[in-house]
Amino acid sequence: MRSPIELASAGILFVVSFVISAIKPLPQPADYHQLADQRTIFGVPNAIDVFTNFPYVVVSIVALFCVTRLYRESREVLAAFIFGCFFLSTASVSITSSLYHLAPNNVSLVGDRLSIVFSATFLVGVACLKVFGSRETLRVVAISGIYGVSSMLYWCLTSGSRLENILYYVAFQIFVVCFVAFCCFLRCARSMSYKWLLSAVVAYAASKPFEINDAQFLALTNGLISGHSAKHLVIVFCVCAVLMHMLRSGDFSCRSSGSPNA
Image 1 (cartoon, one colour):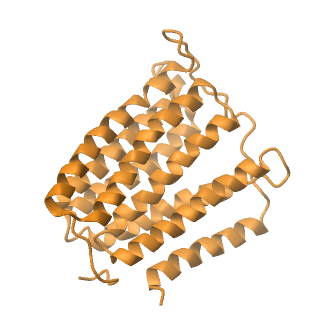
Image 2 (cartoon, rainbow, N blue to C red; image 1 turned 30 degrees about the horizontal axis):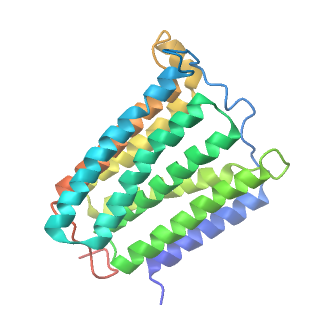
Protein backbone atom coordinates (compact mmCIF):
# COMPACT_ATOMS: atom_id res chain seq x y z
CA MET A 1 0.00 0.00 0.00
CA ARG A 2 1.27 3.44 -0.92
CA SER A 3 1.55 6.05 1.84
CA PRO A 4 -0.42 9.33 1.68
CA ILE A 5 2.71 11.37 0.98
CA GLU A 6 3.62 9.22 -2.04
CA LEU A 7 0.09 9.40 -3.43
CA ALA A 8 -0.09 13.14 -2.78
CA SER A 9 3.27 13.79 -4.50
CA ALA A 10 2.38 11.73 -7.56
CA GLY A 11 -1.14 13.14 -7.66
CA ILE A 12 -0.02 16.77 -7.45
CA LEU A 13 2.54 16.31 -10.23
CA PHE A 14 -0.02 14.49 -12.39
CA VAL A 15 -2.64 17.22 -11.95
CA VAL A 16 -0.11 19.97 -12.59
CA SER A 17 1.06 18.20 -15.75
CA PHE A 18 -2.53 17.83 -16.94
CA VAL A 19 -3.18 21.54 -16.41
CA ILE A 20 0.04 22.48 -18.23
CA SER A 21 -0.87 20.26 -21.18
CA ALA A 22 -4.23 22.01 -21.42
CA ILE A 23 -2.84 25.55 -21.67
CA LYS A 24 -0.72 27.28 -24.27
CA PRO A 25 2.90 26.03 -24.26
CA LEU A 26 5.58 28.41 -23.02
CA PRO A 27 8.79 28.02 -25.05
CA GLN A 28 12.10 29.12 -23.63
CA PRO A 29 12.70 32.81 -24.43
CA ALA A 30 14.68 33.29 -27.63
CA ASP A 31 17.17 35.59 -25.88
CA TYR A 32 17.74 33.27 -22.90
CA HIS A 33 21.39 32.67 -23.83
CA GLN A 34 22.16 36.39 -24.17
CA LEU A 35 23.87 36.88 -20.81
CA ALA A 36 24.11 40.44 -19.51
CA ASP A 37 27.73 40.22 -18.30
CA GLN A 38 29.83 38.99 -21.23
CA ARG A 39 33.21 40.24 -20.01
CA THR A 40 36.24 38.12 -20.89
CA ILE A 41 38.85 37.83 -18.13
CA PHE A 42 42.11 35.88 -18.55
CA GLY A 43 40.71 34.60 -21.83
CA VAL A 44 37.59 33.17 -20.17
CA PRO A 45 34.34 34.31 -21.84
CA ASN A 46 31.45 35.29 -19.55
CA ALA A 47 34.10 35.10 -16.84
CA ILE A 48 32.17 36.30 -13.78
CA ASP A 49 29.31 33.90 -14.50
CA VAL A 50 31.89 31.11 -14.80
CA PHE A 51 33.98 32.04 -11.73
CA THR A 52 30.94 32.33 -9.43
CA ASN A 53 30.33 28.61 -9.96
CA PHE A 54 33.58 27.62 -8.23
CA PRO A 55 32.31 28.01 -4.63
CA TYR A 56 29.79 25.20 -5.31
CA VAL A 57 32.50 22.61 -5.64
CA VAL A 58 34.46 23.90 -2.63
CA VAL A 59 31.46 23.74 -0.28
CA SER A 60 30.33 20.42 -1.76
CA ILE A 61 33.72 18.76 -1.22
CA VAL A 62 33.81 19.94 2.40
CA ALA A 63 30.27 18.61 2.83
CA LEU A 64 31.19 15.22 1.37
CA PHE A 65 33.97 14.87 3.93
CA CYS A 66 31.39 15.62 6.63
CA VAL A 67 29.04 13.00 5.17
CA THR A 68 31.84 10.43 5.34
CA ARG A 69 32.56 11.27 8.98
CA LEU A 70 28.90 11.11 10.02
CA TYR A 71 28.42 7.81 8.21
CA ARG A 72 31.38 6.27 10.06
CA GLU A 73 29.77 7.34 13.34
CA SER A 74 26.20 6.26 12.59
CA ARG A 75 26.38 3.65 9.79
CA GLU A 76 23.06 5.04 8.46
CA VAL A 77 23.23 4.02 4.80
CA LEU A 78 20.10 5.82 3.55
CA ALA A 79 20.96 9.22 5.04
CA ALA A 80 24.56 8.97 3.85
CA PHE A 81 23.29 8.06 0.37
CA ILE A 82 20.79 10.95 0.22
CA PHE A 83 23.18 13.60 1.55
CA GLY A 84 26.07 12.21 -0.47
CA CYS A 85 24.08 12.30 -3.71
CA PHE A 86 22.88 15.82 -2.96
CA PHE A 87 26.39 17.18 -2.46
CA LEU A 88 27.76 15.22 -5.43
CA SER A 89 25.00 16.80 -7.52
CA THR A 90 25.79 20.32 -6.30
CA ALA A 91 29.48 19.70 -7.07
CA SER A 92 28.49 18.65 -10.60
CA VAL A 93 26.53 21.90 -10.97
CA SER A 94 29.84 23.73 -10.68
CA ILE A 95 31.11 21.84 -13.73
CA THR A 96 27.98 21.81 -15.89
CA SER A 97 27.11 25.43 -15.15
CA SER A 98 30.67 26.54 -15.95
CA LEU A 99 30.51 24.66 -19.26
CA TYR A 100 27.19 26.28 -20.07
CA HIS A 101 28.43 29.80 -19.35
CA LEU A 102 31.57 29.23 -21.40
CA ALA A 103 29.38 28.47 -24.43
CA PRO A 104 25.71 29.26 -23.77
CA ASN A 105 23.44 27.14 -25.98
CA ASN A 106 20.67 24.56 -25.63
CA VAL A 107 23.07 21.61 -25.69
CA SER A 108 25.21 22.82 -22.78
CA LEU A 109 22.05 23.95 -20.97
CA VAL A 110 20.72 20.37 -20.89
CA GLY A 111 23.67 19.21 -18.79
CA ASP A 112 23.37 22.23 -16.50
CA ARG A 113 19.68 21.68 -15.87
CA LEU A 114 20.04 17.93 -15.36
CA SER A 115 22.54 18.64 -12.56
CA ILE A 116 20.02 21.03 -11.04
CA VAL A 117 17.28 18.38 -11.36
CA PHE A 118 19.39 15.82 -9.48
CA SER A 119 20.30 18.38 -6.80
CA ALA A 120 16.64 19.32 -6.33
CA THR A 121 15.57 15.67 -6.28
CA PHE A 122 17.95 14.75 -3.49
CA LEU A 123 17.03 17.95 -1.63
CA VAL A 124 13.53 16.45 -1.46
CA GLY A 125 15.13 13.35 0.04
CA VAL A 126 17.04 15.43 2.59
CA ALA A 127 13.77 17.03 3.67
CA CYS A 128 12.05 13.64 4.00
CA LEU A 129 14.65 11.87 6.13
CA LYS A 130 13.42 12.78 9.62
CA VAL A 131 9.80 13.38 8.61
CA PHE A 132 8.83 10.21 6.76
CA GLY A 133 10.00 6.60 6.78
CA SER A 134 12.79 5.14 4.69
CA ARG A 135 10.51 3.59 2.08
CA GLU A 136 8.46 6.78 1.73
CA THR A 137 11.67 8.81 1.38
CA LEU A 138 13.02 6.61 -1.41
CA ARG A 139 9.70 6.54 -3.27
CA VAL A 140 9.18 10.31 -3.08
CA VAL A 141 12.77 10.81 -4.31
CA ALA A 142 12.04 8.43 -7.19
CA ILE A 143 8.79 10.21 -8.08
CA SER A 144 10.50 13.61 -8.00
CA GLY A 145 13.50 12.43 -9.98
CA ILE A 146 11.44 10.74 -12.69
CA TYR A 147 9.30 13.84 -13.12
CA GLY A 148 12.29 16.20 -13.13
CA VAL A 149 14.27 14.19 -15.68
CA SER A 150 11.14 13.71 -17.82
CA SER A 151 10.47 17.45 -17.83
CA MET A 152 13.99 18.06 -19.12
CA LEU A 153 13.82 15.30 -21.73
CA TYR A 154 10.51 16.68 -22.99
CA TRP A 155 11.99 20.17 -23.36
CA CYS A 156 15.11 18.78 -25.02
CA LEU A 157 13.17 16.66 -27.55
CA THR A 158 10.66 19.40 -28.42
CA SER A 159 13.03 22.39 -28.38
CA GLY A 160 12.45 24.58 -31.41
CA SER A 161 9.09 23.00 -32.26
CA ARG A 162 5.58 24.24 -31.59
CA LEU A 163 5.35 21.69 -28.73
CA GLU A 164 8.28 23.19 -26.81
CA ASN A 165 7.19 23.91 -23.26
CA ILE A 166 9.44 24.91 -20.35
CA LEU A 167 6.52 24.91 -17.89
CA TYR A 168 7.02 21.25 -16.90
CA TYR A 169 10.52 22.08 -15.69
CA VAL A 170 9.24 25.19 -13.91
CA ALA A 171 6.52 23.09 -12.25
CA PHE A 172 9.15 20.64 -11.02
CA GLN A 173 11.12 23.41 -9.32
CA ILE A 174 8.00 24.88 -7.72
CA PHE A 175 7.02 21.41 -6.46
CA VAL A 176 10.47 20.94 -4.86
CA VAL A 177 10.34 24.32 -3.11
CA CYS A 178 6.80 23.72 -1.80
CA PHE A 179 7.48 20.12 -0.73
CA VAL A 180 10.68 20.96 1.17
CA ALA A 181 8.98 23.95 2.81
CA PHE A 182 6.10 21.65 3.87
CA CYS A 183 8.53 19.21 5.52
CA CYS A 184 10.30 22.09 7.25
CA PHE A 185 7.07 23.45 8.71
CA LEU A 186 6.31 19.99 10.10
CA ARG A 187 9.66 19.90 11.92
CA CYS A 188 10.73 23.52 12.54
CA ALA A 189 9.09 23.81 15.96
CA ARG A 190 11.14 20.85 17.24
CA SER A 191 14.31 21.03 15.16
CA MET A 192 16.69 23.94 14.66
CA SER A 193 18.30 22.04 11.79
CA TYR A 194 15.11 22.28 9.74
CA LYS A 195 15.20 26.05 10.09
CA TRP A 196 18.49 25.91 8.20
CA LEU A 197 16.84 23.76 5.55
CA LEU A 198 13.92 26.19 5.31
CA SER A 199 16.37 29.09 4.86
CA ALA A 200 17.99 27.11 2.02
CA VAL A 201 14.76 26.63 0.10
CA VAL A 202 13.62 30.22 0.71
CA ALA A 203 16.96 31.49 -0.61
CA TYR A 204 16.66 29.20 -3.64
CA ALA A 205 13.24 30.62 -4.45
CA ALA A 206 14.54 34.16 -3.87
CA SER A 207 17.43 33.57 -6.31
CA LYS A 208 15.08 33.35 -9.30
CA PRO A 209 14.38 37.13 -9.55
CA PHE A 210 18.14 37.70 -9.82
CA GLU A 211 18.29 35.40 -12.87
CA ILE A 212 15.20 36.94 -14.47
CA ASN A 213 16.53 40.48 -13.96
CA ASP A 214 20.05 39.68 -15.10
CA ALA A 215 20.76 42.92 -16.98
CA GLN A 216 18.87 45.14 -14.53
CA PHE A 217 20.96 43.88 -11.60
CA LEU A 218 24.16 44.48 -13.57
CA ALA A 219 23.06 48.07 -14.16
CA LEU A 220 22.03 48.48 -10.52
CA THR A 221 25.51 47.46 -9.34
CA ASN A 222 27.22 49.74 -11.90
CA GLY A 223 28.54 46.77 -13.85
CA LEU A 224 30.01 44.99 -10.80
CA ILE A 225 27.96 41.79 -10.92
CA SER A 226 25.03 40.55 -12.99
CA GLY A 227 21.83 39.01 -11.72
CA HIS A 228 22.94 35.61 -13.04
CA SER A 229 26.21 35.73 -11.07
CA ALA A 230 24.38 36.96 -7.98
CA LYS A 231 22.02 33.99 -8.30
CA HIS A 232 25.02 31.64 -8.21
CA LEU A 233 26.23 33.19 -4.95
CA VAL A 234 22.78 32.96 -3.37
CA ILE A 235 22.61 29.27 -4.23
CA VAL A 236 26.05 28.75 -2.67
CA PHE A 237 24.38 29.91 0.54
CA CYS A 238 21.67 27.28 -0.08
CA VAL A 239 24.29 24.53 -0.23
CA CYS A 240 25.93 25.87 2.94
CA ALA A 241 22.53 25.91 4.67
CA VAL A 242 21.91 22.25 3.76
CA LEU A 243 25.35 21.43 5.16
CA MET A 244 24.42 23.25 8.39
CA HIS A 245 21.12 21.33 8.47
CA MET A 246 23.06 18.06 8.25
CA LEU A 247 25.55 19.06 10.95
CA ARG A 248 22.88 20.44 13.31
CA SER A 249 20.82 17.28 12.94
CA GLY A 250 23.42 15.63 15.16
CA ASP A 251 23.18 12.20 13.54
CA PHE A 252 22.06 10.34 10.45
CA SER A 253 19.09 8.58 12.06
CA CYS A 254 15.92 8.28 9.98
CA ARG A 255 12.30 7.72 10.86
CA SER A 256 11.20 4.11 10.70
CA SER A 257 7.51 4.76 10.06
CA GLY A 258 5.50 6.86 7.66
CA SER A 259 3.97 9.15 10.28
CA PRO A 260 5.35 12.70 10.40
CA ASN A 261 4.21 13.28 13.96
CA ALA A 262 6.63 11.27 16.05
